[in-house]
Length: 174
Image (cartoon, rainbow, N blue to C red; front, side, top):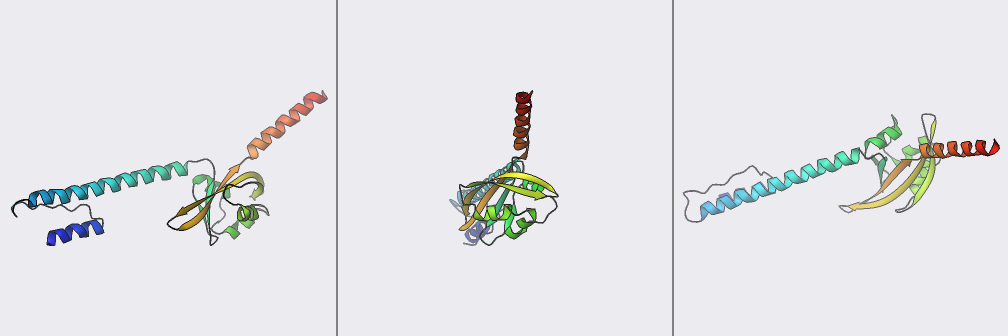
């Protein structure tokens, strides 16, 4: 009974380093000890695999080139990747209201954005205007709803299109 209690405590507290050996205690107890140890080894292997997958997903998320943020119901914001932290630079962004420092379009657009919606907004960071394609989706985890917002900087594409238009105009005029 004490060993069974120790086994259940090991599972409850995720102490997967425990070992059970009932040799010399009678028929069938050796197999029971081996089974307890095998179960804990399996839990440890599963936990290790989950942690490896979580580290992999976090590394992937950090290297996504599109800035990703989460907006929670209480107005809190989480910056999920390096691209999001670079976009906002040295500015402190923790609440939805903090986005008002980046111009008049960004905060209202994100407030109005519903899952599946897209919007084009202008954002000003350190006296530089950027055009962003903003889209939203919704995630529910552990009963908590959050909107995942992607902020794709399309300024480079717009500048390229503008340059192409000017070149076409020059060709027509010449």
